[in-house]
Length: 150
Ligand code: 4NP
Image (tube, rainbow, N blue to C red; front, top):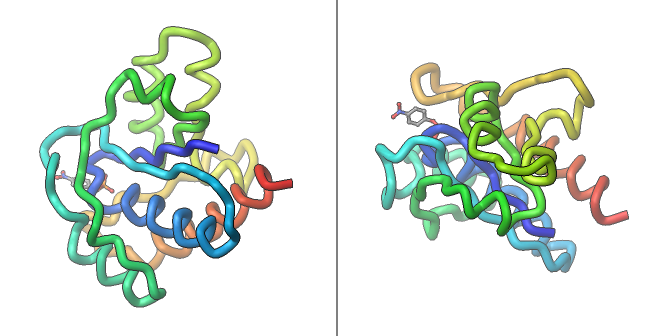
């Protein structure tokens, strides 16, 4: 399974999503590829936000090897699943899909926990809700593994 986590800046939510899912699949010995990217390019090359680094560290996960990168259309072929955090990420990515198969790969990550609910992972950049983001992504990672490692 090749999974790409996508948010706006690739510094807050998707680096946490990448770190949490990687940590779980490594512990389970699953051969998954997990990466992340942003629909915006302002933070390309940067480390994750210090608040994401801190909340990950609190739960024993090191995400300081990550650097932000920009989502590219080729990602729609390279990955099996493109998991987005909110509606804006969804429309920004789906707009670049050229085939139905590519479009079907793009899903709101929280739909794995609450199917068809359109629940989002809110942007914590201004309101500091990194703990909430961690909890949502932790739940989503468990649901993803349960769904695909049957
Ligand atoms: P992210 O959060 O999409 O979860 O990485 C954001 C990071 C930076 C900005 C917005 C959201 N920004 O406007 O720079």
